[in-house]
Length: 561
Ligand code: MIG
Image (cartoon, protein in one colour):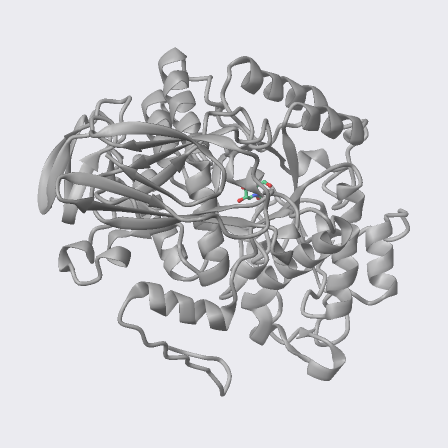
């Protein structure tokens, strides 16, 4: 390891198991707050859905085609000439009305915010004027305003190391949230900058390393803070949203970050391409993020740059169903990448896997809760649960979504079979119920419609009915799919959007499964917590054995199968 300065701090974290190391590591670097539940749904993004009409049409397509979707992202073209915290009056004449209409149809809107503020003296651009007036932008060592070139052309950069700058920046988000925006996407915050206007062959440049940054009582240089730029921007954003949308959880997404970024934001892996290799790579990338304390992560489904084929897109949507952040995105001047543009067969596959995502939401939401309280990854490499099995150490193309569901995706064209490693224990094919005993390798049959999925013996997964968006209707019925074996799982529930859970308004229900002689016993503990759930129908399915239905009134129950 190398450092430009005299100091480098090391932390050594001990633990016999990954779970314990992560719990300790996230005690040090922090944990993510519980995300709004809608942020676990499907997000549709493109650079760009560039006008109100295009966005309305997009939303209509999702609902007409019955493909669930919760979030639409607006990329840089919603702004007036890429000026942050503005709207293009031509393309988005009435954002408040648009967002209200989308809300009525069950969509949330997320807008992009870049750090570069257009350098525009004497143009009545409020953000630039206030920033200069209060000296919020980074200066060079000799006191000149530092500038680079980004989307708004010549641009200056807030010094997010300063609390006063963060407060100011945070509150600027009010101009967006007042219109109904529910989440913010921070991009270009490495920061990515060029030395000359884009398109003019400008080289990428860095801030001068000796540029002073930070508050007066803790002044340092850009050299020391470079890697914190994105983190501090995300912090400013998250804390600002807390203030301006105080009753509601917000969604934050960032491209750049640092250790601890999970406290403020989810992260996506930046500009991938529509390549099979990039689909494959997404699994170890996201697992490594999870092992680094950043649980809420995703890659652009379909690939950002380039044009996906129908087959690549279908396979990617299957894998995307597993991403903690499930967002489809594509770049300017690429072919459209919405789930329906590749023909009926691909559309049907997308619908089926997005439906599955929505069915799994009670399970996935509980995983988010575990990440919030213990730093637990949501998407996990096999070594996370099988740390004593050396075969799992190099195994990067199979993943666990939580403790009970394992996927072995196909990430090559024309492939209908793949080898799957099943570690110690009993495993059940998700689709057929077929039972296997690990450790073993099997050959899975995986025609295009099918991503091989396996449930662990003793696994307990809560399943909801398919809904077109998270808040569509309260859960009136719930299915617990349980695979024979010995296991235990706690379902977490709350209202999904407010901060009441911080005051105890949540509910947990513990489920246990075990054998008693030939019988499978399912024990449901009394519900804990103050979140009120109306009586509902619960179906317990012990896969391959039978089903029982009961009215869930929060009390203890013991079922024999
Ligand atoms: O210079 O905002 O990674 O997701 O669509 C490109 C336009 C800037 C890079 C991001 C990408 C986004 C794009 N941005």
